[in-house]
Amino acid sequence: MSKRIPVGLVGVTGYTGMELARILAWHPSLELVCATSRTESGKRLEELYPYLAGTGLGDLEISSPSPKELAARCRLVFLAVPHKTAMEIADALLCEGVKVVDLSADFRLNDKSVYEKWYQTEHSRADRLDQAVYGLPELYRDEIAGAELVANPGCYPTTAILGLYPALAEGLVETGDIVIDSKSGTSGAGRKAAVGTLFCEVHDSFRAYGLGKHRHTPEIEQEISKLAGKSLTVSFNTHLLPIDRGILSTIYTRLKPGVELDAVRAAYAAHYDGEPWVRVLPDGTLPETRWVRGTNFCDIGLVVDPRTNRLIILSAIDNLCRGASGQAVANANLMLGLEPDDGLRLTPLMP
Image 1 (tube, rainbow, N blue to C red):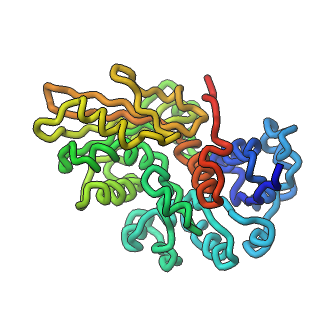
Image 2 (cartoon, rainbow, N blue to C red):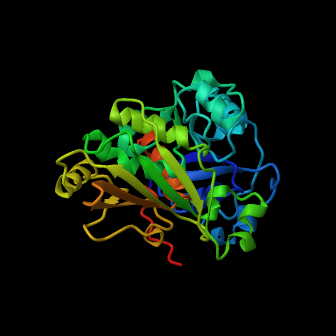
Image 3 (cartoon, rainbow, N blue to C red):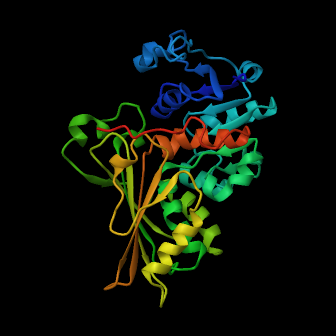
């Protein structure tokens, strides 16, 4: 077996860091040689995550190296840290010649002013925005393969963009009346302690949040506007499910005159033909979060309501895998010239 490629992970203690460790423990071509955390430095990974014992990663000691030290050991580094923190680390690593997959929002938006408006903080590395490639392989596979810096998409935008891609690219729906109604498990809020995501606050309840102001809104609008060839505004509405992982988005669009379900299904089949991580479900079957749990799949279901002439698109992913860490590994595979599905032949984590 050829020597595996050394990679690093900055921010191993959050949910996305945890999921990356799970995937990399079984990756045939990537070797996690450096996992960082300031608060847990000195511990072994299996002390934080006992399920890694015996995998080869359990004995890896968590450390807190500088970007220069990381660069000396790694060809690529995953950044699983919050926005604003990631931009400085990414810049330092890129200056050292290391490829970066950034799981934060710092390089997803093309416009500095849009980022600063929605994230309420200055973007100090805006000079890198033109260099960053948006990491959705179905749209930007070739660009990702040649990239030094990939901006891993947000979880909600992944469901929305993949759900709308064929309909907008083929001009099947009207562009002025799109509603994206999304529901996520609580892991989407991160691992930090907060009253709103405590078990007793979430269990046996269902609520909306962030209406009209969710930070993923400009990311969705940026990418679907490119697909439509004009500036789009959508109604994006988010809800918290009493489950730990998974997203289901229900997207309401209005069909253009004369467009039938057969034409819609044909467009989706053509656009996603050969794509390993998108499954367009057969007529009459709708996505469920449990069928994608722990995998890199995005399941898409299509329904036409003839009474309202609406095309209803349903899109389901695991927010931690396809919505974050699995997608990051898919991007790393492309950037390093590996097989696209290396390390991602994952079976569902059944409840």
